[in-house]
Length: 436
Image (cartoon, rainbow, N blue to C red; front, side, top):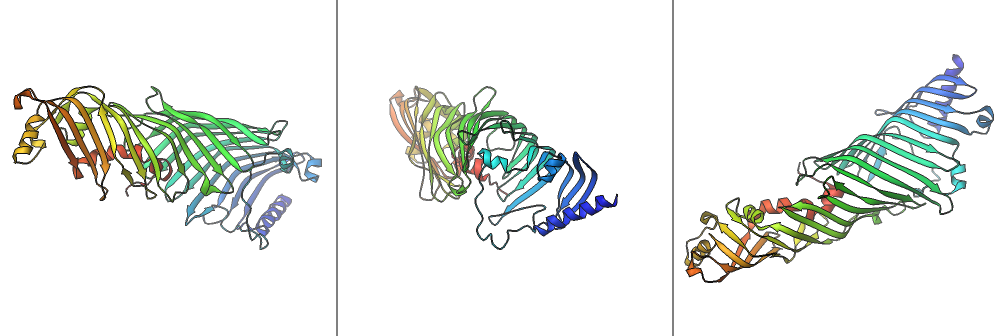
């Protein structure tokens, strides 16, 4: 009908007058109870497309510019960040009016008065997706969203088969959801979140399928998400808090209350590490090493030319630099109990008498005390020193000896790589930068 075209043209003109560009609208139906659009496209060359929009109303509501329902289907929004500036498809030409010289920070509606200003009672978004791209990470989030104004305002979100890419590390999430309700007396939204079927691929260390859950709250200025993630056997687990400040994003931070994962037949753990969204100073953490296999360490250090028994535990202080590199300061591991070390002679080169003695002793060393020191030198090279007390029954008449054995340089490359994902949570969790 001609008046549908007239109405579409009028809506297009109104949107373009308010800053949107290249608006294309097609109306399928208009009645006394609602209007249905079968296409809305905004912007070029990558337009924001709404495949279906239904607005429900009564005639009195329409007169007062208030609507019962908004139902959208097929909303596919793409946004990207470049040079500290975000842009979104369909909003390329949108700008504030000249009087809006200073933009106000986003605030979350938390009062009845603020919600009353919203001109509809129910919002449903179905079969839609959000794609975010930055230099450090990207995300593709198919989603459904439902919002209800009253009598108790509620908001629910569900995303199936989401994909995240932290640098070169892809992650898929089978299901992600949250539900929240407004507490008008406290002026706060409270709710729960959950994630199922989290699979991290191509990580420096293998990670099993994870699941997570927790609580969330949102005031006018702050969103706080608390909870944890774990594997089915709980060998991988973490407790985290994310606090985001709308008015001051650079002061937002992720705090790791606890994180544990298996490593070399033992466990690595960190506690109470704060990772700011914007980092200009060092991040310090104590890496706890619990009951790690001496044999696994020796095989790494000697490229599988050693065997051993026993386990070591201790703490390794780590400093993460703003560029993502890390340093180790005087870390120390000690043996949980006596054990043995057997190193292949060809793993210890050298032909002087002292080296030959060390090589002979380490062919079958029975240690009573073992201490392993780890540290980064001034050249940032990672070094390890073994201090052992024990004896070799077949050498030196089985008399007890004290040995100091130093490993360094390229020999430790594999050990450093196997630890980097845990000692650098900022790089893995926030930046995720990988080698090209």
